[in-house]
Length: 366
Image 1 (tube, rainbow, N blue to C red):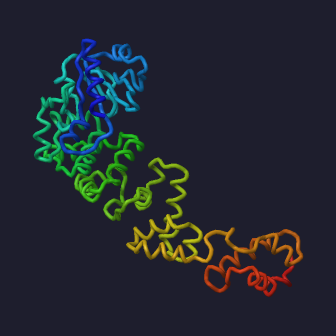
Image 2: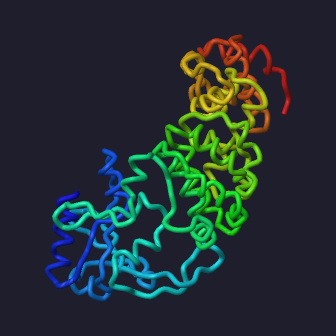
């Protein structure tokens, strides 16, 4: 991946421009972390990049980025620029292309994301990002209040980077977040959820939550239950506890899962909940209630039936047995049989089920 990126940079420079790998990939290389995204910055304009790479695409030409795919690897190539004006503490709506690398780096968020690599693999560190890596600290490029006022997403990114890298936030950043945190309310719930997912899915999630609470971001994010959150390796289980699916974006399937998890949370894990909702939902409840998952899995495996089709008698069999036409009684009988099997009072054998039905329903009228 790195070799391909360096060849791509050389191709750009062979056309008379300058280019560098910048940001997360270089940072992660220096930290010994595997990274799958490579961003490239260059003084070549988008039209120049398109002429060099005819198969490139423009995900956001107005913002100066071009996507180039080489050997099935996606590279984002962005022209050096200076951002002049932002809209709603988030989007740069006025900028100009420039030719100076340092000026381009100065528009970026954190110093650890400004380290570059040239076509020879040499590190270019104009803003002392390596110093922050050595200190394991997150610091903004320039004034923190200005950075967070320009783009409030940087507030959540600061917490996310601190969480994922297990770095501290500089005192300047902490003070600036507290002063500007109200701007987080201007962010879309999609973008907030995207950053929160990365925090909640990280091995250092408890540290991330501590920072969110310490900085008062739980209120701005409308996460009133954050302080009581029980963490484990499942995002749906985490979001279920936060109870914000009425404001944050989720799929229909995710909402249904959260509803089911809450229903089991409000009762107990038993043969009926395992039968009705399955192992996944009950395992999430087990994690929240600090119940051993192995115990829940054993309970599920020991169920005499796991779905209605496992019952060794069906509606047609019942109609034939009772010599009756279809009707609402069939549902009543099947629910009763289902329950009796689950509580262990009926064995799931056809002759036993037939005897039970004849004994209890033979004289029942439509």
